[in-house]
Length: 292
Image (cartoon, rainbow, N blue to C red):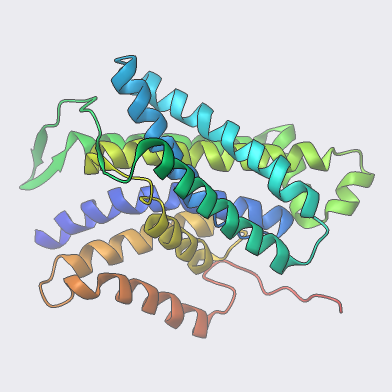
């Protein structure tokens, strides 16, 4: 029974990592950029939700939607200002820029709100439900429900809409997509918007569960979500989902045992190393050859 209980806890946490990992994998799939500022968009979403909930006394749904909208604005503005001018630069330049943007967001938020953690308001009265001896809180159910809904919505956008078809075309070959009449710049911006919306939603969901937020809250979840994206095969949307769930379950199980609780992060990253030694492209990634 304990095993199943921890599995449920792991699925709840893993769904959060999956939401963030999707942003990493979609952006990388099109412009081959590891957007290390993505974890801080998650932090922006949490603080946006915090201020709308406290100043305007909003309920959960409006808070979630507004947090996603503000996160989208931040994501698109960052892409236009920081990444677009450097799109044809060496990848190391883009990588360093992404790290710089991440530090700017973290320390900028620290300057605005201060370094002390903030208590996130209780938008939903927390309660627990017992099913067959298993305890599941309504926050966990909400997290899973919202995450699954957003993932299904993303799947629909990517595979059933004209914009999604443009995203998939650009991920294969941006030059060929441009020649076929696709506006690659708008497609890239839309990809950043989608990923940022998911990260913003994850920020609010985590803030509900953890109840405290701070300007550096995006560092470790962002890193673990990146690990999840690489584990699943970066550039693969199903891979990001699987990677996020695996990382969440692994972390939950390792923390549930006294002997491994302090080694939880080390175990998580060790699994990544083992998987990549066996499958260098990740679980669902494909090995690609580049012309030199």
